[in-house]
Length: 96
Image (tube, rainbow, N blue to C red; front, side, top):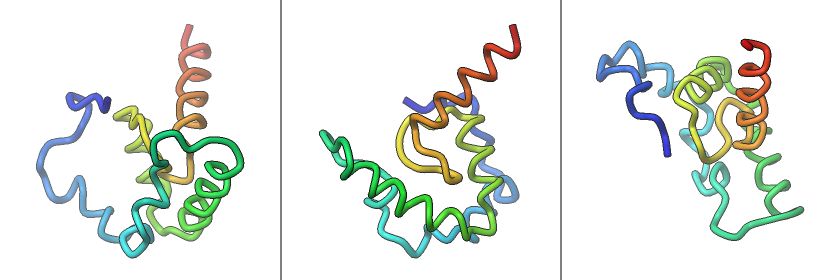
């Protein structure tokens, strides 16, 4: 579950970057796997979502936000949930 206490408040300037996301015009099911999806089907769906992210003008803001709030599901900022988890885990190791 997303850690709500880490989300910025309801100030439009903090969220406005989302209006520029390429994903706004994409099918949201591309970014979130259905229950039970595994293997090559899941990889292909995630890669298609990441291809959209790759050309997004706000990929850095999206990635930063997803890591900050520890977004548990979906592709955000060009990273899958597993990639975000690994990146956060490696940051914890480096902080010790």
